[in-house]
Image 1: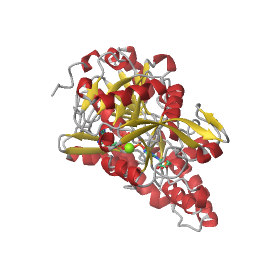
Image 2 (image 1 turned 90 degrees about the vertical axis):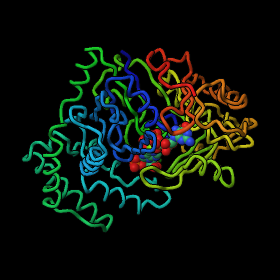
Image 3 (image 1 turned 90 degrees about the horizontal axis):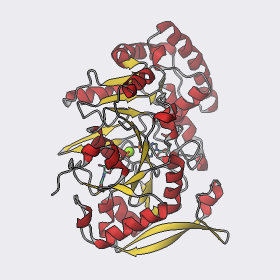
Image 4 (image 1 turned 45 degrees about the horizontal axis):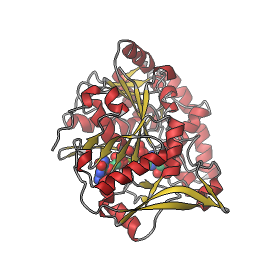
Length: 443
Ligand code: GDP
Ligand code: IMO
Ligand code: MG
């Protein structure tokens, strides 16, 4: 059974949650391998809306096991809240949720440091979600992080906490003039969280390996997106984890030889939330149109997102970095109202046109996008489930985009609901999951 990585091809919020939920009924296991509760993955089921922050989007499928891998940073208070809310809505977590012993904890001083750094960063502000994800990964890399397994070892937990509180308080007080923490104020709640989470904490790398050896199929659910990757994104305007396909291995303990494919997710246009370069960003009427039709407001923060045209240069880069075998193009319906639609085919910089995504921050800020213009289709594609039903101009747009980025599309999403989905018959996706054919009912 295939093991496939799902990754965002842009700056996050590409509708990974929708796709993972759709695919989750065709796999045995879904693994989150990086990020934390900075993610917001939306799944719409009829009239119900679920937004997953730390939990994998496969959790709504009763037969699907869900794993939080070692590459994730876990805010236990936020995770328990998410778990309790799900249980209240009738979702069972018993026997189908597993949390890695090696996953690092987000501690109360991490969001405090996140906010303090941002407040003093001026022009270099990143516009983080304020969840403490960056500082938690900084402690992990600095070898002073506290892990899930430590929660279960009171003596070790206290020892590590005491060291960290002394260090963080100095930074908060002396550099940022911000509020400090006492060991006791953290210890009590965290020991309660330990009791709550203990039944779920285990050696998930071993479990995954055993399941794979038994022929189970695993789907790796990326959070954020390629352009937010710590190494391959628009550094420093990125998140602090490996969001790209390589992260699926380090973030779960599964060797690269066990991964069979990669599905990229991209919107039919582009957007980003937070600060940082965005070469195809629009301002004015068209930006507003995409924002309102696409409901482009952050699922976690509610912040308005910046919107722009599809960027074939950045997408081709994402295909290369992740080795994407196929792409899901989402939110096509958002473009229905556009008179013209554009695709960026190059960046003009100092007299040259660059067609490979550059690595220099200055170029991202200063390059002018070179566009190819297509006339819009101006009819509704919302909810369509057959490729042949799409207006010719919409098909031409998708096919041109696919030609420019060098990979075919296996899925076109035409609405947030599970069945507002077009499945292309001969894509790697249907080869990986033959049971997908016929699973999306024709209209
Ligand atoms: P994720 O972080 O990649 O999982 O994406 P988000 O959930 O943050 O953002 C995607 C948003 O688009 C959610 O509100 C989805 O319900 C919605 N959505 C998903 N697919 C479609 C689609 O094809 N059309 C429209 N109009 N909305 C969609
Ligand atoms: P999903 O998984 C979109 C952005 C933040 C900020 C930068 C760093 O739902 O696609 P952080 O809090 O991670 O240190 O913030 O990354 N960001 C996201 N943008 N979708 C996300 O997640 C994001 N997670 C972080 O806005 O620019
Ligand atoms: Mg999101």
